[in-house]
Length: 113
Image: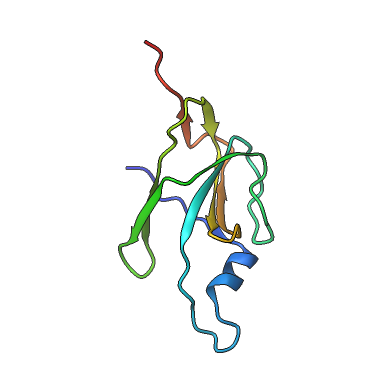
């Protein structure tokens, strides 16, 4: 079984989530997943995904508990790359959360016949 990816919520993402007036949380919708081959130091101060190759808008998901969300994203392109980091973007372009590691999460590519 693959270990879960634990993303860091950015400062801007937290601002989008928490209502400053009363401290409650506001609903958010992740509309795109950014992908990168670049390993980077993940920090809440990020505002964009370092070395972003592209954004995928074929995103779906659902909450399965108070602390777990299952999410899928599909890359319909023909690119080949080593995926080392992802970023979750809100509809207004805010980088909500990010994850990175030195070793590739996945090798993405299309088989050639």
